[in-house]
Image (cartoon, rainbow, N blue to C red; front, top):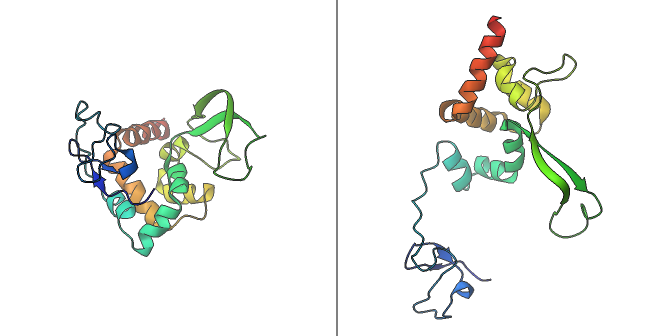
Length: 175
């Protein structure tokens, strides 16, 4: 594909030269990004701290996050994925692929964990919030403690659902 070093003159999206409709490298015309100016999207909001640094910088801390981004996402998510996965094609060589039979859904589970199980997913935002980081690390132990603290703090500051779940936990503890 080469480098993505051509900019759409209408929306500014970065494109590959092979995505032009006129095949001109001097004044390329792109349509897959904005339909040649017919679609106008708002500019992206600036990423909150620390996500901006973790995603955009190239220091060891950021590289560690980028290599494990799906694990951090899982550790901080409210739900887990549920589906009936066809294992005939899962794990076959090439790009990771899976096929689903029927519906894909999100499992949220109960608000409080069973006594014999540690809290997970949304339960972590409700149950034993004083040990939130340790509860997350018990579910996915190979995460960097400091990165997880930064991300958790960010979610507590900007995600309204975190506050709702924390308030629900407070109500449960008061009863």
